[in-house]
Length: 315
Image (cartoon, rainbow, N blue to C red; front, side):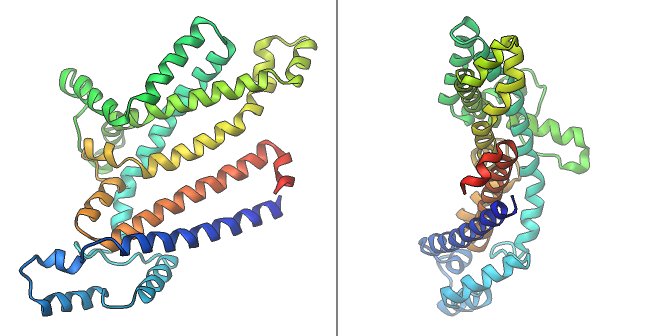
C-alpha cells in the first residue's frame, strides 16, 4: 500500500508542475496589458511603465513564473493588481462560500442518486426503472442555469421561501447562510444527480450479472440481500470516480450559478478577475482549483485501493 501511495504522490507532483506551466503560459499570452487596462486608454507611456514596474510586469516571464510558483509553495499567492489585496486573503474569503456550496450540492446529489440508482437497478425494465431513467435523461439534457432560473421563479418570486440571490455571510448565522445556498446547491446538484444515478444503475446491473451474485442467490439469499451484502460494494468503484470528479466540478465550475445568484464565491472572483485583467488572481485561483481537482482524484485512487485491494498490485 505504501508503494502505491508513493507512486500516486509522484504522479500528483508531476501533474501540478505541468499544470502550473500550462496555466501561466495560457494566461500570459492572453491579449491586453493589465497596467494599460488599469490606467485607461489616455494614460501616458511613462505612467504605464511605472505601474508595470510596480506590479512586477517588467520582469521576464521566467522570473515571474518562478516567483509565482515559489510564492505559492510558501502560501503567498501574490497581490491583486486591481484591489492591491493579498490574493490568498481574497481566496480565503471566497472559499467560505464556494466550498460549502460544493459540499452542499454534492451531498444533495449523492442523497438523490444513490437511492434512485439502486431503486432503478433493482426494478430493471419495470415502470420504476423507466421513470428513473426518463428523469435522469431530462436532468442530463437540461443545463444547471435553467434549473437555477426556474428555482428562482418558483421558490423566490412566487412562493418567496428563499431569496433570489446574495449571501448574508456566516456572521448572520449558520442556517441563514445555508438557506441562501439552498437554491444554488439544488441547481448544481440536479444535473450531477442525474449523471450519478445513471452510473450507479449501470454499475449495479453489471454486478448483478456476475457469477458471484448468482452464487449468493443459489446459497439462499434473496435478491435484496444479495444486492446489499455483495453487489453494492463492488459497484462503488466507478461511482466513486464520478463522485470525486463531481466535487471538483462543483468547486471549480460554479461560475454561472454564482453569477445567477450573485454569490461572492471563487467562480465569480475568476470572472471578475478576467474582465479586469487581474492576471495574478486568475493564475492563482485556477491553480488552486486544479490542485483541488488533482487532490480529489488522488483521494479517489486511495479509496479505490481500500475498496478493492487488487488495484494496489496493478500499478
